[in-house]
Length: 472
Image 1: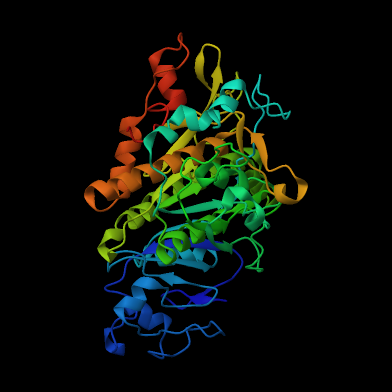
Image 2 (image 1 turned 90 degrees about the vertical axis):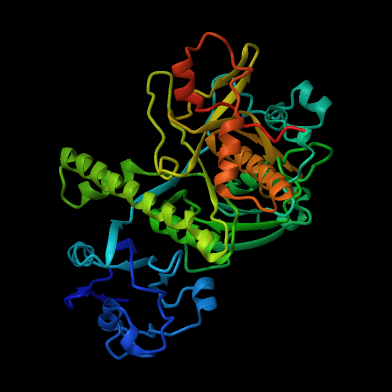
């Protein structure tokens, strides 16, 4: 698929770009060709129903009703233009050369363009002193309480809420292909889509990562053990954005974000992936850049992505104009830190408007930040020795398994967010991302943490503190 820029230059299909652009009204709402914005007239010179210039494909300008324009993309093909928020904003993806995309940006039709950036799974980590390497993770207090230590720490079961009526999306590695046989997901309706391959049905979780995360968000009790923060959630959206090898790219993530909210109406979106800066640097070096040039260029591209996400999330946050509440986006802050290497949270968790989540562990002295957890998160949650659903467990007879990482912490926050959403709907008639965000950050606590850590250092490590469910 090739499109044409404003001056007629072809956009060669070898590099992907994501853009945010402005138009003069809803795309496709006006029935008259004369009312088509100038850019769309250039792209579709034949008028309504005509093929796009130089596409060689079926892409057309199709006038549609306002209702349809709100619900779905108005141009469908491998290139999709979304009317995603208020009547002067579109989100679009297309493939093209840097020069051609720069011309679109300079034309002021497009506000921002970023080339695709490699992403990777936020891999589970082994914490010093963790018991995740064996099956004896259930400590006595968990057995007695019939609940994981994470549920106890965030006070999920004390709230009396279950997340009923809240729609949650998980952007991860997919879901256990036999989830219908797993007791943790009994009664859950799954809508799934794979953004990593051409096979849209291949949403299976071969890494047992997305399955574990979903179990923490909403898992039903398994053999009497409570594992899910919000077990009343019944409507779930699964977007596979990490391929089976653990390596994806930013286009998968952005497309899935739009799909989960814009098409499927997710209230809460949980993400556990990170931008892969070393992989991007290697791409540039293979392309001829020397290591110093590549490192500098990677950071320049990364900063452009931060700016892009700010624009994208601002579009999502304006979703109330379409009588649809914008989503609350929650993301793992990232792993990889050590006692001597202390780096900060990365995209997408570092984007403005995203609640980034650090991981904590339990010790005899109290809670402590997990050593692997990156600095600068918004909030924290249990992320070491977290017991949750295991992919393939129904067949193997091992329904639960422990794991550690900020990926295990973020689902606790997503689950608690669902509890707050439910409570606000009961009290005010509706929940909103802004209101739930305020409750999460305002209700977090630093009580129970081990003494001896200076307050500024503790804030760097755990943000506002440990997320807490609504009080009784």
